Amino acid sequence: MSATAEPQRQLLRFRGRSFVAFVFSPVVPIMGWLEELDATLARSPGFFAGRPVVLDLSALELSQSAIAHLIASLQERSIRVLGIEGVDEAQLGSGMPPVLTGGRQCSVEDARPKTKAPSGSLLLETPVRSGQSIVFTEGDVTVLGSVGSGAEIVAGGSIHVYGTLRGRAMAGVNGNSSARIYCQKIEAELLAIDGYYQTADEIDGRLRNKPAQAWLDGNIMRITPLN
Amino acid sequence: MAKVLVVTSGKGGVGKTTSTAALGAALAQNGERVVVVDFDVGLRNLDLVMGAERRVVFDLINVVQGVAKLSQALIRDKRLENLWLLPASQTRDKDALTDDGVRRIIADLRTKFDWVICDSPAGIERGATLAMRYADEAVIVTNPEVSSVRDSDRIIGMLDSKTARAERGERVTKHVLITRYDSARAMRGEMLGIDDILDILATPLLGIIPESQDVLRASNIGSPVTLNNAASAPARAYFDAARRLNGEDVAMTVPVERRGFMNRLLGRRAA
Image 1 (spheres, chains in turn green, red):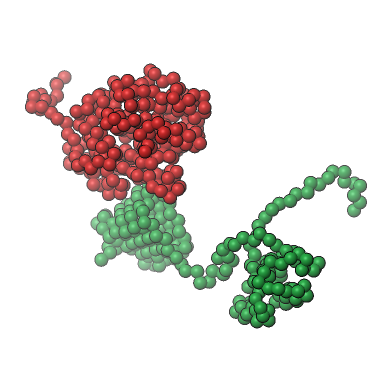
Image 2 (cartoon, one colour):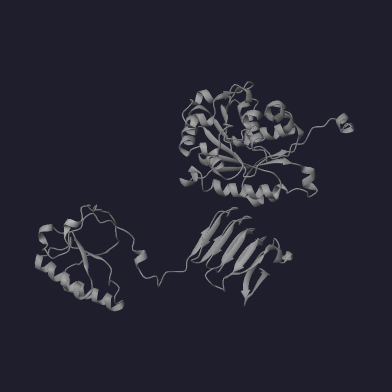
């Protein structure tokens, strides 16, 4: 394409953006470190595939050829090096990734596969007031105080209220039909488990103000006294 | 150490303005320097209850917008020299209040007074949230009926989450003030009992103000009930509440109307 046809100049735009990368800090002997890496890869193949990796060489004294060899060894294992930290610019050859500085520590919790993540539970030590909505889809919710009229608790697991339940409680919202709702005193506006619900009108009046639990028996919600 | 106290409720008509004026006057009678601030922009009433409506020149919004100095807007009470009023604007609405402006005014008032009492508007919108924004303590005015109690519960939730103190991880000290309480009707089960209210709100009780004609009478002549008739039952209840605000331990009683023998015989005049 000839450039003469375009008198209008395109504005060049630069944007700063930050990314999360794994940082590898190899130690001597390099061969031993690579074996360790291979062992990790054997357990979870492809774990580093497609993920940016930065090499931190500050603990090592490597020649240019040694650095080139290390990068090549990683490349063989499908690990692509985005940049190198902790070396002088002069130590790097022209075909190598650039030097990076100013990296900051961050948590890589999200990057890990969530296979062993515990289901978790949420503990609330203060009363839940009217108008507040507590949504915790990861697990159980425990309230040490009361849940006020017009308040709402939504939990992926079960709901435990050690005060009076006057508001709405929705348990097992992710399709967990074995979730239950327990409370010290039941005056709830609405109880729901896995989408099946009952309003205050339908709750047996004899249970009012007493300890009770709600659970699903097939597609019927049972509300029974505790103890 | 100045204290900023917000008088709030969520629901309207429960007695926030009356209680602000009565508590302010009661604290001022104990010799403390008190300013009552009307946050009900557009529907101001505190000036009427304080009997200062004919002396309003500048108001809260003028000060927020820098049109007037704080000292120009403050109105000194005619009866108590250490009681002041900062009136609201009647011609504007709540959008004229800004967070930054309120913060500056409250900070300024803190340096001049022992108590800064903010009379919150009803509702949970801008006016109410800004009235409670910089408070250290809160009086939640509640009537013994379910709608008022639930609204109070909502407001307590906001005090625990939306105030500057809550955002710093500190707590706003909260007190429940039950107004318009009629012990005879509560005994007959026509009203929520004190225990029921405190059970729902899970917040300490500051006082119980009995339902009384004295309150309305005082409002209509533009005087806080604690100034107008200090011996009346509601005034005594407000004085007790003011002492509790100051950390005194005062036994909780429901003051009743003192009626003389003749009054009891001739209670009501027939038409």
